[in-house]
Length: 107
Image (cartoon, rainbow, N blue to C red):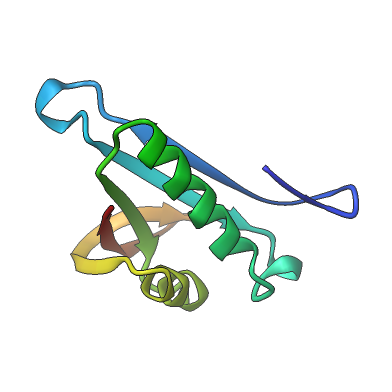
């Protein structure tokens, strides 16, 4: 969780895989409130998750981003994630079905 001046500004989660053959992978999710975007919070959260991953023998991080979320797409590319593909109609937001961009980063 990221707190700025006593106010919630964003979060990061990482969920590791339990199966032996994919135990080296974690799925991450980053969220930053609109008023705190583009000031480095997203980058800081990604770096925190990467540090956690290295401490926990995670070698690959995966993230899915709604295709219309240009700020998140830009962040993922800026912090070294590679686009792997687009999943059609994979995400529902406010009753609208949207495409999702799959990203990964090998640590």
